[in-house]
Image 1 (cartoon, rainbow, N blue to C red):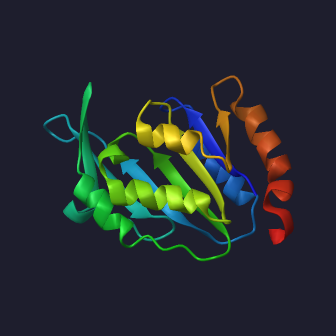
Image 2: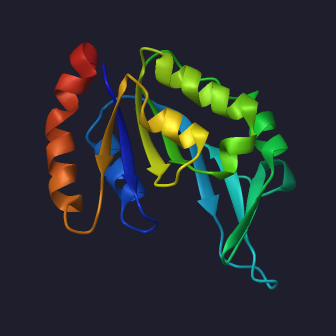
Image 3: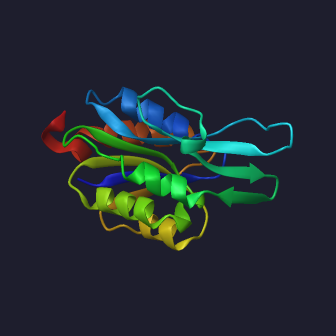
Length: 173
């Protein structure tokens, strides 16, 4: 079983494609979602991490970074704390939406993601199109296929990946 990694620039439709793929898979979904919030009064945008499918909590414990125009501040201790709670069922689909550069300085979290990609379970992930050792390791993982999404191919890519899902999931569907 080969994982699906969706790579593209911000706002191109990586998360939308993931949602469409998950709608086509009648299996339980678990995983991680990161969410950038609208700007605060000082212009910074907080970024939070959540367990996929669970109620979202917007608190210091889940805040993994701050983005400002042209710069970002990562909170690796929040990623690593979250990694200690990452536990996925042995069946179904695991989602990482999205893996980015903020994680690069969080060794427990990055190790947990790479171990998950090593497992036999099916992973769908949105991956930032940035060069970091962590993101490079994710994109070149031997069990993963990278699909680049852009405004011109997003509809055809969605169609072709949905058609591939039965073969990718083997006997799980």
